[in-house]
Image (cartoon, rainbow, N blue to C red):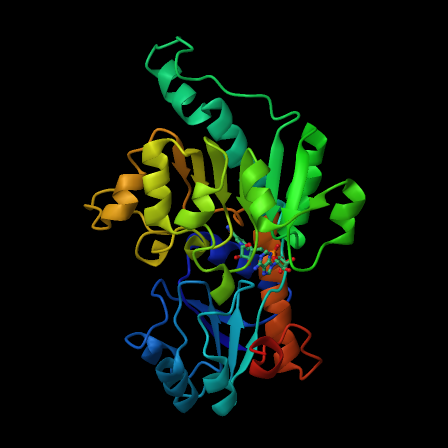
Length: 335
Ligand code: NAD
């Protein structure tokens, strides 16, 4: 099948071509994001392959359908960038990769915790500059510390397993407690108890209307002084302006972000010779106790292999009219 792959990076090309070697799909890679301005590039392609920054709104979907596209294959789990109702109306099937490696994201979240706690980002620079003093590098034992996990699905439950190995006391909040976490000894508590008791709070819930700015002024005020917050879920779960104020007063002692509310204008690109126009993001970069990574939680060889395998499998299943186990529909997913 002829597939236009949008937002293609060299690693996408490598992993998709590797998995495609046993198939004969014709993958054509475009660096551009899919948008109303670039949708015409897909003319004549029965399938388009998209990532998180591509926009498949009603206007784009109409253009795609009019020029022969019948399949949108997402190389990610989230589908908030696709208008599912418009896709249905235009007879375009939407397939995704529901799971690829919860370990990749969970390990990255724990990596941020350890780096912030022991100030590895600062220590790295100190020693390279011949500064072997320990001043400013004091951390704490993870053993015995209380960690609050918000969202104990695939990723949150792996975080619980890893931190259980460190000897942390684990609290969690989720609408649907996970029996695997309960078996591990995780205590499900109310959000307010989790805020009050946790030394570290790590976010693993999806971005939904109810979780938008979950971490706001009020939530921050009820947390322990010097709390560490880790967000590898979605940027808008945290009210960035509120967290900046809490960093200024010391209420938040450490902040680790792999996601940011306005990341679409920044992440995944090399902007090192440009001036950052986002003043909120620029302020975050000034704090010594903040580490920001650019949405790389998923970025392991294992996860990219799984993403590519499922994506190529999805294209093949659609082409051969076999059962579509990874289909996203408005009826099932917008209920
Ligand atoms: P999942 O669906 O397995 O788990 C999400 C959990 O959150 C579920 O248990 C659900 O019940 C819970 N939840 C829903 N609403 C909640 C609420 N209001 N409060 C608390 N918990 C709530 O998803 P997952 O695979 O574990 O992924 C979690 C999130 O991680 C995703 O939604 C995505 O935003 C993010 N993610 C980030 C990266 C990255 O590279 N940084 C990669 C993949 C996923």
